[in-house]
Length: 383
Image: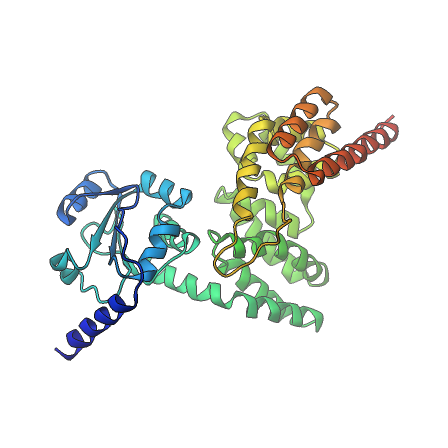
């Protein structure tokens, strides 16, 4: 009784303080099913059942309505994987009571495997990346406990990484190896910010350790072999980079590019293949297999760049911040390097159409000059 009393007091205070009094719009992708109907539909279609318990006066719920649920990646995930329903706790009191909802928002998830048994829940507002990390983990078969452990681990990444560096500098290679392995195994790969640490920072830092400590080479070689056995081409390429064995990656690429079944592996790992192909002056391969539809690629980069220019609630973006010129250079440069000047000009024209700024003009002109010089030097060296 005491708990219920304070719960009602809290609701009253929030209602009085909240300035969010507008009409609530159900997010796109959510259905009007009752809980029983939604559960039946999800089980019949072997889909996830996602339930959002919210209240119109709840500020975190409002933030999710404005920022999380409309997010294109969240929308796509729901459309592909789930039946989603939303219940206002003030209107659906029986459903909220059955689920023992005491704070909003609360997101409850059922998986195809868990059936009528609740898989897990998240209490409190989530941004798109946090929600997707949880949902993707459930989709990959992670248990609710595993996902909680992964979230806890994400909060501990920087202390482990800093500790690994200190140990490496102190030449305490055995302990440094343990710390770097911990980071490799615990970074949540669906979190773009932290995944970059694993994909880009670790290869640089671990090379020094591998060069100095044979056991580190053995451990990362074992991880590389395990990734290949599991068909995890993404990790396999990164681990080749750690081991300084990019030649192995290029050997695979030369076979994969003639195999239609491996096309997706090449496309999905283009970020890691770009520097290898450019370093070897294999610009035609980059054009043919990484950017076969260059104008489409440029437009994809444009959408990403526009999103990057929008500040999050906790960030500020400089007024002249424009990431697009640097993003398009390799696509443009690959076609110049391959001697396909007419297509390169079409790429440049599309870049100017999307971003007709001095920065874009200067970036393309400078890169074109550098690429043509590289072509000349390479031609002389291979004669």
